[in-house]
Image (cartoon, rainbow, N blue to C red; front, side, top):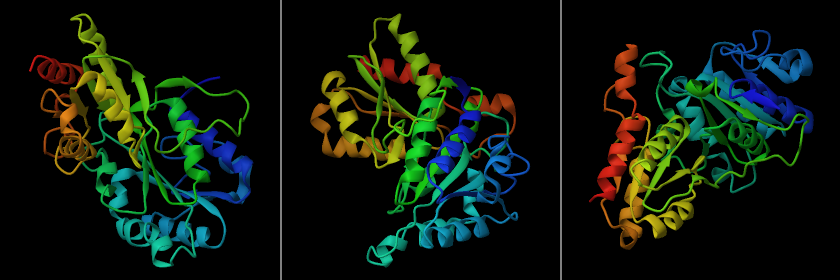
Length: 326
């Protein structure tokens, strides 16, 4: 069945609530109101008290989810905007991420934290950040960044079934994007965490990109094809664990790397990938790897400025052109 990126969230949650009676869902306005983005409509009516509206307190949401997980449930906690993870940062990085480790493996916290992420929708600097980069240096968390309807559906279901905490970043600028999932629930329809998707095969240059940048990288690849430049596009889908093997396999063919990252360049997953390739796989490269990222400024509220802030297909294509002709 055809469905868009926003509506597939409720579908994935419903299928997992149906699959496992231990799954519960909590967050601000997720029940009666159907979510701030209307992404969870119908769940409260269908599943009753297993879908809980909470106070406006991110600390309470994550704290309750940790406690519920320790008592044997599998909570899904929604943080309305990923930017608001700053409010409950301590609960995520010092409690959720470390509980299994500090108990010597005696306790697990199978908590899924869903967050609406990213720029391009005109929400301004405090509601548009690529917050996935904030958590890269926190061992104990898995981080998934689905860029298609199919990947969001499959990765969200895999996250809920995982015995460790998983942060799921849903890009709100992709909400209208359409895709297809099975018309009826299929318990085997899962996307494995930690496996990249080779979206497009090519021979001249590898572009690695996630979420919104995945689609802009594909547009760049289409433009470069007219210049007889063959582009391989890889979507990691998961930042932690990261499928480095998929990138190195691609570089054995192309020998050239461009990474397209939403958000400022420093401290992000793109810079980390380039550092790993440069230090560990330098012999695969025939040109310096290039990072295409946003400016190191807050996300602008003005629509033309926000458009200029985000890397577009033209900038990604220009970077690929440069490394191919190096």
